[in-house]
Length: 357
Ligand code: NAI
Ligand code: MG
Image (cartoon, rainbow, N blue to C red; front, side, top):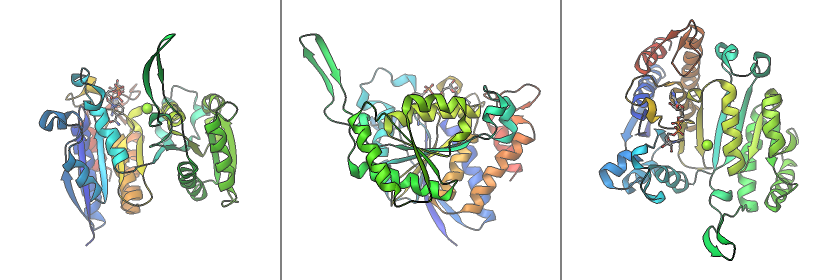
C-alpha cells in the first residue's frame, strides 16, 4: 500500500477546528482508495511563538521539507499585534513559503451551482465563473531590494522595489501556460506595462514563452482594467497570470465572486518538492472556538493536496463531490447566505460532508 507523509499545520484561531474536519475526510477517502497517510503535526504561527518564541521553528521547516505535502489551516491572532514584524505569526508563514521555494500560488475560483443565486453579484454574471489565478509568490515588490525608510530633505521617505528577473517570470509563466493547456487553452496575463519597466519585461517574456504553447490563446490586460473586467464579465477568464502584488489584490477580488472566503482553497507549489495547501482565508479570530467556522475551504484544500500533491485524483474528486452535495442538500455554515437553509456548525458540517462521501 502506498503511504504518504503529510505535515499538518493547524495553526491558530479556527485552524484546529477546520483541520480536524479535513483529516477525517482524508482518512475516509484514503481507506476507500487504499492508500495510507502518515500525519506529522507541527507548530507554526502563534502556537509556535507560545512554545518556542519563534513563528517558524526549525523542526517545522525541516519536517515540511522532507514531507510529500504540507496541509496548513491558517495562522495569526490579535494577541501578537504588539510584536515586531519578524516575530509575528505572519512571518512564520512567509518564511515557510520562501523556505520551501513555493513560487507558484494557484487559486481556483469556482462558483458552486447551489451558491449561484446567493452571490452578491447578479446570477447571470457569476453563473459560469470557473477560473484559476496563478500568482507569483516569492518575488516582486514584496521581496525586492532595496527597501526601507530613510530621512530625506522632505521628511522621512519609504520605498520598496518591484523587480522580476527573466528566470522568475519564465518559471511562473510556464506554470500558467501548462495549466491553460490542460484547461480551456486561454491565458490572460495581467501587468501594468504602459507604466512599469518591470511589467514591460514581464510582457516580453510571456509573449516569448507563448511561442512554445501555440494552442494557448494569450491576451494581456493592464491590472486596473482587469480589476474592472473581473466584476463586469468574470466568465471571460480562464487562467489568469500575475505577479505578486497584482495577484494578491486580483485573487481576493476574484474570491468574492464565489460568495464566501470560506469556500476557497489554494496551493503553493515549486517545480519539484512538496507543495503547501491551505484555505485562502485567515485564522478568523472573531469566530474561533465557537464551532461555527466553515470547514469547506479546508476540505477543498485537502482535495487540492490529494490531486496536485499526491496524484490521488479519485479521492480528490470525492471530496469535491461531497461539498457539492451538501450545498445542494441545502446545508450552510453561517458565513454563507442562510435564508431558509439548514445552518450547521463546523463539526456538524464536517459530519455532513463525511456522510456525503
Ligand atoms: P480572515 O480571513 O481570518 O477573516 C476575515 C473575515 O472572514 C472574518 O470575519 C472571519 O470570521 C471570516 N472568515 C474567514 N474564514 C472563515 C471561515 N472558514 N468560516 C467562516 N468565516 C470565515 O482575515 P482577517 O480577519 O483579516 O485576519 C485574521 C488573522 O488571520 C490575522 O492575524 C491575519 O494576519 C491572518 N491571516 C492569515 C492568513 C493565512 O494563514 N494564510 C491569510 C489571511 C489572514
Ligand atoms: Mg491577500
